[in-house]
Image 1 (cartoon, helix red, strand yellow):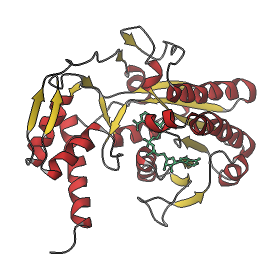
Image 2: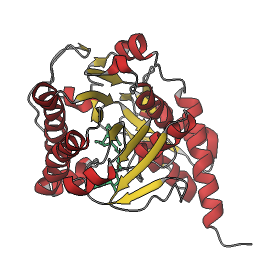
Image 3: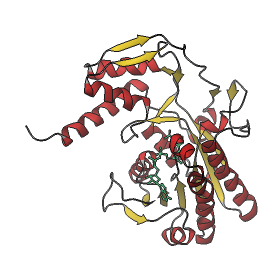
Image 4: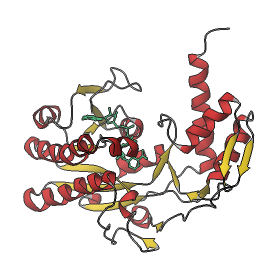
Length: 306
Ligand SMILES: NC(=O)c1ccc[n+]([C@@H]2O[C@H](COP(=O)([O-])OP(=O)(O)OC[C@H]3O[C@@H](n4cnc5c(N)ncnc54)[C@H](O)[C@@H]3O)[C@@H](O)[C@H]2O)c1
């Protein structure tokens, strides 16, 4: 298949491009900026997802679009709500409209498990409807989901909605907890855990997410919603201990503070296992090891020769 990936220069989508190519598909990158991760081997269109006409031209001859471009940093969304709305809501509408005009058969839409943030259920699968959102980021992502289902019912354009869990791995932004702890270790600074770092997260390794995006191109995934979540709970303290084990050069300091917050609902990934044959393959220990190795290589490449 020929698949256009929006935001293909970014963290998760760059891995999607790698996995598409690995699986024998043709991947095309559509982004505002050239990819730091790929060269001429991947066709690149420089443009904005808010430009439906340019998107339509880029989609010529494509079978599907994996739509990952977004304002994905919650702090940036809160700082500039109208910019975020233009990207996450309007931009998604533009992608769907361009796909419709170009005769593309399916839009794979990158959403997030944060859409369940305002739900009260303790166990959540895809049959639970997300509650009305209290955050602008989830509001924008849910707008994109709503446009997907509307384009299906009005124009018969197929969608697949993928609600990503908390991703980590090579190419991650610096704001993630693992990246922050690795930065501390590189500088030889202590990692401070207020209240013991007992709060847990279900991380999912980025290449596993990218595998799921490729799997979701299957015909049976049309017009389905999937949660893509990690299989283990990892506490923030375990993240710190893993960094200490892998890099040494740091000390974990436990300070007084609020004990771990409630981890939130348990979100089921069973549907992806049953229908896409997808379960995350990389446990946190292995994923963290690969991330640290990548950071080491980058640090060595950036260091002036001895
Ligand atoms: N990172 C997370 O924690 C997380 C969690 C769940 C879901 N998601 C979703 O996954 C997707 C990818 O997230 P990420 O963390 O890899 O993001 P990222 O910020 O690393 O990548 C986003 C890419 O989109 C591009 N982009 C921004 N505005 C654009 C525009 N107007 N036109 C074209 N391209 C544009 C950026 O240049 C960037 O390359 C997003 O849809 C996000 O909402 C992310």
